Image 1 (cartoon, helix red, strand yellow):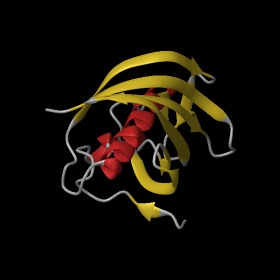
Image 2 (cartoon, one colour; image 1 turned 135 degrees about the horizontal axis):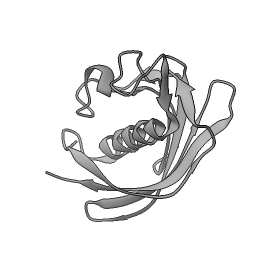
Image 3 (cartoon, rainbow, N blue to C red; image 1 turned 45 degrees about the horizontal axis):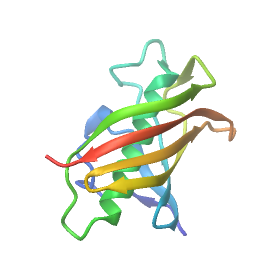
Image 4 (cartoon, rainbow, N blue to C red; image 1 turned 180 degrees about the vertical axis):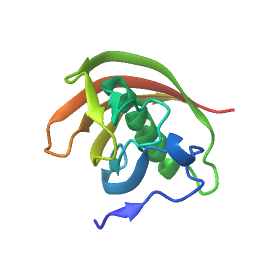
Length: 139
């Protein structure tokens, strides 16, 4: 599959709050691989670096893209990150403006609630963050 941009309007994030940029793979309906980066003008950036925990938001945005793509056309809704479990941060901080890859795998869904196993890898392929995320899709 060729890399493609995440369409505007698919998720509500804009400007420096939008971390996910493109879809790299969607090999199965429950798995999505996205690329993104933390912008230099991120509210979390200090001297060109952000805490590694910010990468959980990149993973949550990738999960939102996966959920929006799985929804019926035009049914994409605002969603909420409601829990982070078993988070492992393998770095204290990361540089802004570097390409990051987030892989999300939906592990369960009941109505508007969904759970995902997520991992974010750095430009050298090293895993920086992994976790289980829970989201709620709805107004």
